[in-house]
Length: 348
View 1 (cartoon, rainbow, N blue to C red):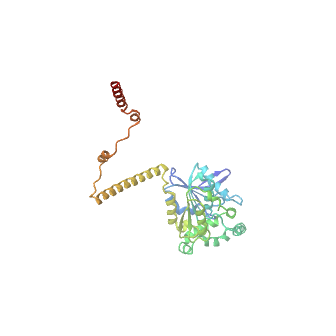
View 2 (cartoon, rainbow, N blue to C red; view 1 turned 90 degrees about the vertical axis):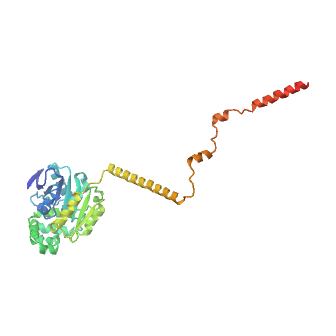
View 3 (cartoon, rainbow, N blue to C red; view 1 turned 45 degrees about the horizontal axis):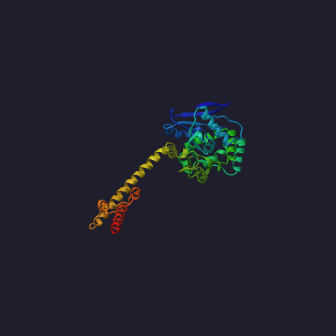
């Protein structure tokens, strides 16, 4: 772990993987910290330089007075990339992290290669729920929120079958500073990205937890419908799908992030030309077969050769030079006139 300074504020950042590998930024959910990604690091770090950080007001990062905004939290992410001298990175964010991801692909697409938006929404309903959470965190402390929140984060089966994993997340939630939780809750309360994400231009995968009561499937489906070309992956889990189904989650993320890019236009053109050439050959072969079949069907008829056609064809018309030559009848008329004159002289 390392605390990096951004202006007069500090952020807790951890990096894994080869230094020269493509960069991948992970952004945590409300009420957790960078350790929520522990199960994904072994596989992701084989392909990427993985950068995970504690969001503002969480873990060991700066705790500034709220309210926060999604734009402010997103600019924190960009500042971390700037400080690490990373021009462009892929991005994975869950819940609040996914809201940050939506802002990034909309307002800073030149900084994002691809983005995974998991268990998240573009707008989170009325303000009453969030105002209640802000008051509870500030007045009663984080312990008062644990039972209700954790019940929505995991399915009953996971609560029963993986109590140790649930206990680790409970400790993260309890350790989250009340002011940081309240400030971030205000950011979620005031967010509405339903229309702005229509302008997103980066490749996006939306992960939906099929049993998620916090951000139901309809929320993820709306994001995918509003972002051109976005894909959907569904995981049988509640809200923290990366913890409840770590293998399925990691597999979906890697499949999307490591998929080969589309072929360049020049290759497409070449492929199209080859296809046309193959089609032309097939067409020519088809005509040859048809011609051969026709000749077999009519054996009694002789085919007129081109030479015989040439013999029967009428002679070509004379050109301009032939038309200009006068006929040779004039000399004959002059000879007849001379004979007539001679006869007259004889008679006389």
